[in-house]
Length: 112
Image (cartoon, rainbow, N blue to C red; front, side, top):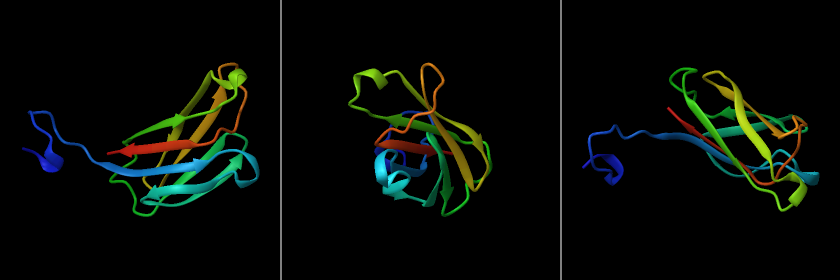
């Protein structure tokens, strides 16, 4: 049995950071909940920098996103990390047409 109760021979990987961001409206860029995230920088519509409390071991980590919207016209949304450093990652949110969009909530998980 590995740490966290996993079984099998695959390595157990750790979530190093997570954040739920209010990505829309007047509170855009506010943190709803987080771990190992010191702050969010709202760089403009659909563009956020996630700043880590404790740096990642290197810039080679996986950052994945999840987002939600109740708007039928905005369901084809792509969110992803476009730039990593050990201390932060840049997250961009766009419609399938390539237009920047704010969405609420926007979640980011970092595994290293």
